[in-house]
Image 1 (cartoon, rainbow, N blue to C red):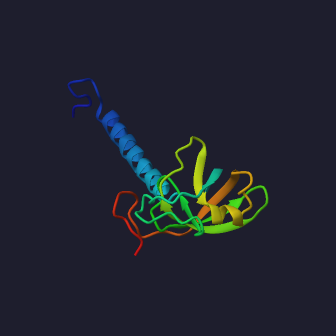
Image 2 (image 1 turned 180 degrees about the vertical axis):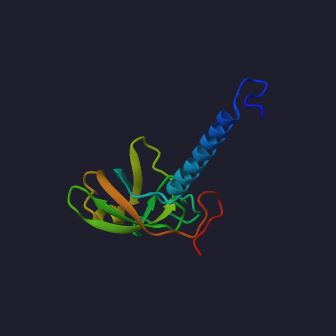
Image 3 (image 1 turned 90 degrees about the vertical axis):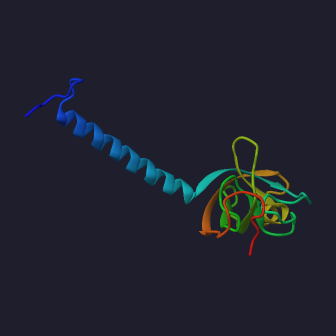
Length: 145
């Protein structure tokens, strides 16, 4: 029985290396699934009140409880809590953003008013998904149905 191949690797080294690669692939697959579910998070949020179309194709309405997030599927409902005062609101993701480093959400003016951040313009918030959306993650033509 030959213990080494032509490069000097033993059969045992080959098996160990193969198992290590398989374990790494499995770990990355689990990590990707966890990120796809967008675990709860905390960070800086701001509010906006434009009248243009959102990334989901609907017109922005500052009086609705909506928000922008970089990757959550359109239609996802998210509980947003202002860390300073403990006030919470449920918003529906219908836009992409924020595009300012360090911010995790842009909420509508109505949502900002509910959690007491209109005057300050921004707030430290925590958010968690309360209902996953059934819409596309990104792209034109994704409309709520």
